[in-house]
Image 1 (cartoon, rainbow, N blue to C red):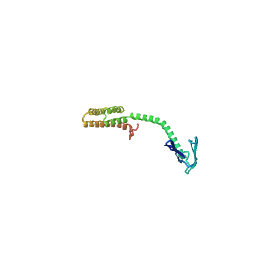
Image 2 (image 1 turned 180 degrees about the vertical axis):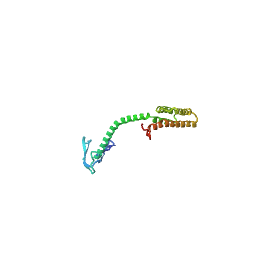
Image 3 (image 1 turned 90 degrees about the vertical axis):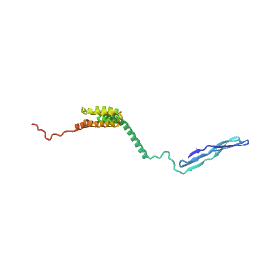
Image 4 (image 1 turned 45 degrees about the vertical axis):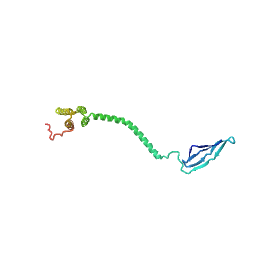
Length: 221
């Protein structure tokens, strides 16, 4: 049983030369569990002016019974739930340790693969196409140099076409003619596609193919 004492209520009165007062104290009892017990007695000491002595006033205690279920000392936890929680904690701990061990290795492997991918002709050509879509002339020149460095040995007859297309884009890049500007970018895109199809895609198909044996091989004499 919980006890909640209230603030004391004190009043004083004065009648000529006579002063009197009253003090009232109250306590609220709240049942928190089933059971029974004894409310202790209350004793108050006061000074008797007539007898010139300290006297004690007593109020006897009383028994109190609460008809309700008895509260447990701790929370009502299912043992099966505790086992499941323990397994989850162990799994999470092991997974965290494994993740901390494997993450640096995966990161290193990813960095290696990324560097290998960025060193390919396909990646360089993709960067060149993105710069062309943005109409970024400076980015096109930078990406074009990187792409040229990763190409197979180009045919000299195709080099001038690329140079002319790049020069046309550079010439009209800051010009006011919008149609000429768009046509120059379109021409550069077309020349690049043809150039790559002939010197990269075509070369790959040629290198990856195989030749059939002759139908009538010449017999040795």
